[in-house]
Structures are given as C-alpha cells and as structure tokens.
Image 1 (spheres, rainbow, N blue to C red):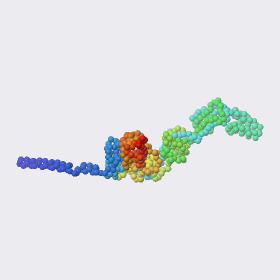
Image 2: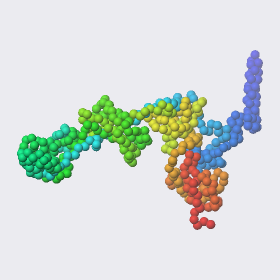
Image 3: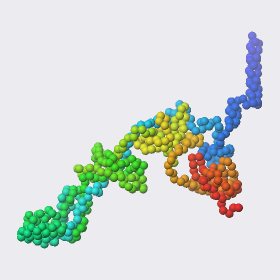
Image 4: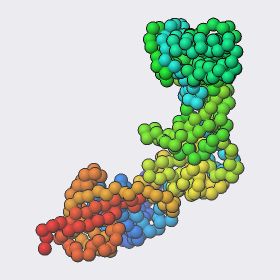
Length: 493
C-alpha cells in the first residue's frame, strides 16, 4: 500500500514537471517566431497605418509632412493616422461619463424672442422748459426777495424790485394827457410807455389809480427751479441784462446710455418704463423723444433722451433709474442660450452634440442678446443640440486634437490682420511652402527656430533660393502662421 502511494506521487510530480517544461518551450517558440501576440499585432498594425501628417499637440494648427522634434516644444511630433480621419474632426466622450463631466445640452430653438432692453439712465432738466428774466430797461435794484439758486418757485413768484426813473416822467405825461381828455395824444403816450419796457399790467394800474408807479417787480414767469439769480440790492442794471433763470419741472428728461450694438433697434416714440430707487415699486411711463447724433467714444454707447411727465414735481434731476425699452418681438428667430457660446475674440463657436457622445466645434454668426438668449444668424439649424455647460472642456480637448471649426463665409468688413516680422535664412523650398531658420518674432513672443511656413502666394518665392537671407512677415490664421511677405535682405548677390 505504501509503495503504491509513493509510486502515484512520483508519477504526478513527473507530469507537472513535463507540463511546465512543455509550456515554457511552446512560449519560447511563439516569441521567437512570427508576431502572434496581441501586443505585437497591435504594434505592427499601428506602425503600418498610413500617416496623414504629424503635429505638435500643444500647437495643433501647424501640420508637418515628416516626423521629428517639435519646433515649438521639447517633444516629438505626434502622427495623425488616416484611419482616424473620420473621427479627427470630433471629440468623442463615453455617454456614461457625460453626467460626471457636467455636460448639459440645449436645443436650438426657433420662435419669438423677448425684445426688452435693460439700461441705466439719469434724470436731467428739460432744457426746452426754461424761462429767462431780463431787464427791459435801465434801473436800480431797490429790493431783493429771499430767493437763492436751487429754490423751487411757483409761477409769478417775486424776485426783486427795480426803480426805473425814466418811467416816472413818462407816467406823469401820460396822466396829464388823460386829464386833458385828448384821445389821440393819450394813445401816443400809452405807446411811449410800452416802448420804455413798461408791462401792460403796470400801465393799466397807473391809468386806473392815477398815481405814478416807478417800481417794477420782477417775477418768475413759470414754476420751477431757480437756476440763476444775478441781482443784489443797490446794483444798477442795464436794459437786456439777464437777472434770473428758471427751469421748469412739469416734465424731466431721462438720459439713457444705450450700447451702440443696440442703437439701431431704438426709435423715436418708443415706449419706456423707468424704475427709480428713490420710489420703490413705482413704474413711470415715458417715450423716447430724441436719439442724439453722437456716440460716447469711451463707453461705446449712444445717448437716448426720454421725456417723463412730472406733474407732482417729485422727479428731481440727478436721480438714477433702471430703464426698460420695449421693442416689438420678432416671431421667427433662431436662438440658443447665451451660456453655450464660446467667444475666442475673433469669432464665436459652439460645441454641436452629435450621436453616440460625439461633439464638433461649429462657428456661428450671432445676432442680438437678450434675457440670457442669443440670436443665431448662421451656422446652426433648428432642432440641433449644443453644449450649454462644460463646453470649454470639450473645446480644450478639440484644440489638443487639432480640431478647427470650419470658417463661416460671413460678408462683413474686417480689420487688416497684423503682420509679425523677423529675419531668417531659407533652408528648403518645397510644395508645402518655405522652410526658414528664422530669428524671434518679437510681437508674437515666439523664439527663433527652424520651421516650414505655407505661402499666401507662391509668387513670393520668385527670385529667391536656398541660402538667401530674407525678411519674412507672417500673419496668424486658424490654420497657423502664413507668409504674407518675403524679401531678400540687401547686400546679397
């Protein structure tokens, strides 16, 4: 029995040893033969895939026709394979990760868009409602009533008393002719009183009382704010001197600063609602009375004048107001949430959501913005979905992959792009452009290096050859740097 046990154990151990040895030999044969492992198959397949171009992930707009070291960063260029071309223009995210990344979608909608514009305004005097008090004849100031600039006056409020010596003699002559009963001479004397500047009411008072009235009481023709009072007791005044200025308060102006981008939607007669912090809960109605012809250069706004009625006089110039300009709503506009827009400074982009977690950058032409919604004039269609939250993360990923949104054909004037200049030497000329060993582009903050530039016009290379020292001017485009000017430096054969 014991012998059988030992014999079984020996046979089992021998079997294990033979199995291990056979497995080792079989593995060695596979490793030393053709590439059969999954790792080797993947590596071989990847090495054999056709390459479209090489690029630097940190500067994906620039493409290179051969591998090597990036001229921008201390790293090797990365290949872009042909079989990945179908996905090269999109960013793919596992749909299960969408919620974890905080991505939120919004639908491109067509319909009516609220058309109210919220701006800020300041109350000012109505400059059309002004009364000026002048001396109609020379005289002396006998009395000044207790008035001062800034006082709110009622109509016909007394301001000062003037003594007019010339009136005394004219009034005596008038009363003498009245006693004589000569109607013709009396009419001539009355006309003389008018020509001396005597008010009609004072002439009537002299005629009825039969007494001389050499004093004239100056009064405010309208109710309002006393802006100027240029009289003092004992002073002499001449005919035509401005003695007082009164600004009415029956209506006030509301000066509103409208952004120049919205100025085209404002029209005279447009309804306005104003809310003042001084009167919480009160809503004042007015109309646009004028659109001033000059814009503010600093704030880039256009001044709009709104007239507000002020029957109780509580609206005072200098008060601020929150103003709502109501415009007729357009019924068929394409719009998206304003938060979905990515503004690069040169153009506006959105991340368009496609099927199976695919996202594509799309350039859009935008219209006006109101109430958190932005009108889309070009680039999107109704029913499409855009990323409204998390789009900047996708845009960063698209930039790393070298994905550039197609440029819209928008017929609008643009400023001439800035050119950046440097000196260099021609290293190679080929179908891709010109390879230059150039110095630093100081205006770009780009150090000197050797790189290939595409040409805006192949004719730029006429008369140039490898080895020539040149001055190069480039401009930035969405596809990278483009040579606009190439000039051989002087002194070369």
